[in-house]
Image 1 (spheres, one colour):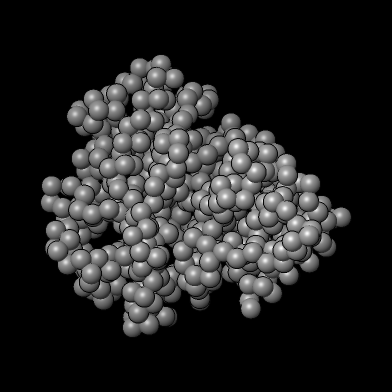
Image 2 (cartoon, rainbow, N blue to C red):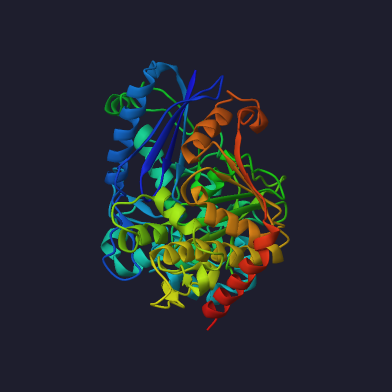
Length: 492
């Protein structure tokens, strides 16, 4: 018996095929090999064509099935992880109306800010745990005002993962966790937020059927099974946004547990047992994958847009030509803590919620032409990203989320010794890296949803810790001094 997990990111679509009994990963791959394009037709815009997602999902499915050489009929369930709070619109025939407005698009900020002011901060925060901000409902409000011809065609609005599941099963549906990503879930009433739909003038018929995060969400149609090389009738039994799913993949389900990622964006995600919120919405609270009305599990999410995308920019524009990320890590290790005075502010990928939706862009400070070179810039980028994590984690700490241990996958920026050691040194946290990723987590989530596993403990019994990073006392002072210098620059 096997489990198939997908992770739809903004850079690629990854898939993993997992043996349900041994939890061994039989095959894993991602497409495209070069990052997917993000269309930026105007400053602050970010769109992707859902047809491109589907084509890459098809390619990666064929790849893992060819590698694993298993009978598709023995796949017990499918799980889907996806880039959060994007907007996909479909018409009455379930065809996509326009490109998806994805997570890092900032055009909807004024719509969310206006809603927050006019509905009232206390009402929004006590019921939604957030400002409507730049999330899915605010994006939909932008479409309603600026593209009325497209708005008139809408049968359903959905999240990227909802769209992928609909393509597989023909069934439009979403989850309470997903609605909370779009700031559309009322935590007090435990239903979609009627007052906010009414404020924007949205018909709640635009919401697809709400299904559980874990459980039957539809079965693969014969037509799609033939297209993907799979078997008709395979159930989709789990879906979640990429950050709640990353927490699941690291078995972070209970209060006090912390998960992190360092992909295109950087995220720290902690679990609370109280429906708490940040009054300034610099960090955001969502229904976690195991949240229920009688057992509150709220995921508090810190997101920094400009993390690994900065590292990629440094590789393409600063690092010696032809070297890879591992070589960059080696160059950075040879520079002292604090990068000998060079500081990089990493916020160059759209409006930053942690900065109250300001868009300061990336900037480089302290360069001396006689002393500094490419390696200093590489190290300063890794340190700057770690500093942005600490800046947001201090806000989370104010909400009662202590950061003593951070769990992350052994991937992306957490492969950088400079980044992870800097983060450990300035926060005092131990960092544990595990042999997992979003697509493996989605496969295990599918096993929970299908009843293959009795519970999460059963699903994650083989999760292996591969690296532990502890604070270096001898470098703590220099790291905090560099952080203080960075913070003063940020607040100028």
